[in-house]
Amino acid sequence: MSPPSMATKLPSQPKVGMVSLGCPKALVDSERILTKLRSDGYALSPDYAGADVVLVNTCGFLDSAKEESLEAIGEAMAENGRVIVTGCMGNEADVIRARFPDVLAVTGAHQYEAVVNAVHDAAPPVPNAFIDLVPEGGLKLTPRHYSYLKISEGCNHRCSFCIIPSIRGDLVSRRIDAVLREAEKLVSAGTRELLVISQDTSAYGVDVRHETRQWKGAEVRTHMTDLARALGELGGDKPVWTRLHYVYPYPHVDQVIPLMAEGKLTPYLDIPFQHASPKVLKAMKRPANEAKVLERIKSWRAIAPDIAIRSSFVVGFPGETEEDFQYLLNWLEEAQLDRVGAFRFEPVEGAAANALADPVPEEVKEERYARIMELTARISAEKLAGKVGRTLPVIIDEVGEADEDGSVGATARSQADAPEIDGNVFLRDVQERHPALKAGDIIDVEIEDSDEHDLFGVPV
Image (cartoon, rainbow, N blue to C red; front, top):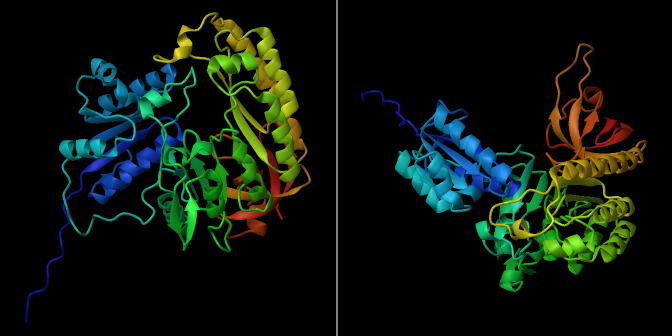
């Protein structure tokens, strides 16, 4: 009789911690890095204490973001001591090493191979067939039910306030068949909402002359409209929301609006207008066709009445006069954008705008920021009040615990709300009507109330 077999003893996996800062594009970079490391046999650590090495994915867009990145590096050094720095601020390795000379390595934005090699050097992997496993859709830093889908790197614009091209380079589009394959995997792994991101989604494919690729037996162009149409076919019987971010209002954007009216594309556009005054837009080196944009917004709403338009604006740009700022306020009053974010102009090292004349005093920036936020909050409140009494589809983000009366609430979002940046729809009495409700479910709700940013309702 043979002796009983001994259980296989698995080797101890080196553990990696991750601090991810900045925009959704950086978050996607973090997910890709962690997915590769997990496939190499690394485990993930939820805290500093358990990590053999800590990755800090930095943001370098604004000086305030750089300082936040340096603070995060400092915290990781203090709590762990074995730190690798990557991301946008990695291009300023001298600044990082001047403050933290003991960091193990510094790599730049989307240098995936370099940062993975640095981790290999700091904490060598232990190959083992039992632990080198990765989920089909890769590792995610967002909830299971929504995913960011990055379609390109870099940008061809040279806006005077921005240093992104110097950090991430010119536009480099991903192959459209690779993008669609990734989207399909994400959906099959449970994603119910795709958030398409890049530095300039409208320019997708320009660098490859909108080359065609084979997908599902047909040719698709590397172009925003073809991509949007193909993404709209995913999900089958289970609808998948597809949301377009960072869309410049090029003429071909008009072609995606009918897809929203048909329900193939979420009626939502994130367009970085930045300002409305022709003089300020010229100084920013941005397209100055604000009057034409207003006409197009009206035509979009005629085709897809529920379209939500979000944008961001810079106040206090060098040379911005009170007349320029009032022009912006008047434009916003007419445009009636659904979601608006505003930022006080902040000089960024290396940006051309720093050399412009007539800087706006800080106290004036603050006063203008307060005025634009007051106006846009009023517009938002009025638009949301108009939804009271309607029945709208929402996607569930979180189902709460029962309160003392046994009532269960939930936090959701409407099609007008992107995660983390827009509003919410807060639901009551969900247990009675949807006892099995969970994150990622898409249900209809009756809107009962609203405030400046959020809606309140009950499942139908």
